[in-house]
Length: 230
Image (cartoon, rainbow, N blue to C red; front, side):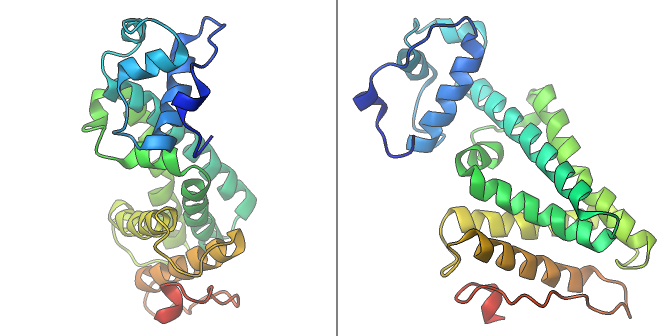
């Protein structure tokens, strides 16, 4: 839908009774076209073809609508991260790599949703309990995975939650740079994977226990990106 104007398409057909679902769908499409700040709740109603007061049966404000979009995003992110952990097997370090890569690839695959999830339009997630809960479920996987690395001596003995902030910061920074096209030379999915893994490995060098040998991948990072200029 990206690049196609809603004005050119006209109203979306609304033939079913799930107005809440229709509103979250159209909100995500408007975010893709204009950004999170580029539309109003009443405009979303006009696109669907319902009265301007109809959305207020489900969402008090536009922020509440975006919170519903973000909640779905965190559910998808959590589920993707869980699948990545299962696919990585039992090696704690590979699970840490898989977790970071799944986060970055989620952002690359769903940049509009990612921007809603972390953008300033939702000022306080705690005002939306179901959103706050699913966000915690997603991020709890990070300290849990770090703790597993600590258990086998791969990561230094620090509070896992504190180290998780560093891990998340790296993954989130890479994801943001990628979706904003700020990493030159990282265009293909393979290049994204190589770059993400390279930077996650750099993170591990800072987290590992003293005396633990590096377990770096033999795959070089993509040319032209930040990792290749270390």
